[in-house]
Length: 347
Ligand code: ADP
Ligand code: MG
Image (tube, rainbow, N blue to C red; front, side):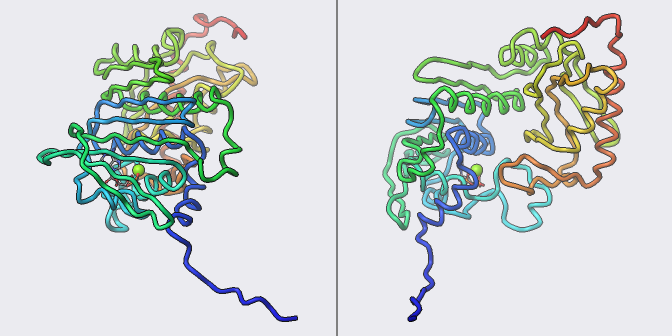
């Protein structure tokens, strides 16, 4: 039987990007996460997010960061193009949220993305988008203050198989809101506005003082959370842990109010989870889950964030030390909450 000649060929840039998009762009929430991280990496301190139909129809993010110069606009949409690292050594101590240079290329291969940006000292703003199988970029001048606006419409319009996995508008919006919540908890210095179908959902002003931070936490989770939490701020041997831990009596049936950050990055990590669980072990009723918003700060060289693009895993250079620090700090904080202050848990 004659065998069919299978010839090797290069994938078109769009197809290569669409395949890469499979890793990072799962739903509207992932688009918002990538875009907001870019805005924060650009030192923006005002972020406005407008979404329509749970983000499937449109996501528009406007920031007041340093913007992208016109000469770099085309590159910003290409794969493996980044301004954030240039050598392998840089990965050892990444200070930015992004560094893979994949997000904009991926998103523009599976949605209609336009980016408008302006930088200090440039005559006008410029707008760019990519089109066709080779994702050639098209540019035109467009008025814009210093900063960047990214508009993403019709997510997965050209990848029906992926569009089928999107849920209802309500579900997609709740995932998206969770992304904003996580970022707003990690960056008190940044103001956030979230609108859904033109309705303001969150309006969070920058918060400096402890009281302002607690107000932000309260406006995200409700006043009950702060009323039932203890503030933590402990520093030892180059590690700092701060934030709020819920009283054992404020525990929940699900582990849904647990926020842990490592150097400002939201993290779901086995070692961290274990240390926290251990600390609560003696004070929590069986099967209940603690609530907490905690920030661990340490020398960036002590932690590897380049483990997986989305899984929020990290690798600590000295995991045992981190575990001990978390456990002993939280254990002490919780032991100080006198048992007679506590009532049995309510549903
Ligand atoms: P990465 O963030 O991994 O570098 P992206 O594809 O997300 O890759 O972005 C590519 C580049 O575009 C970034 O490195 C940055 O230089 C630029 N960029 C993207 N979004 C913004 C923004 N909102 N403000 C300023 N620059 C941006
Ligand atoms: Mg990025």
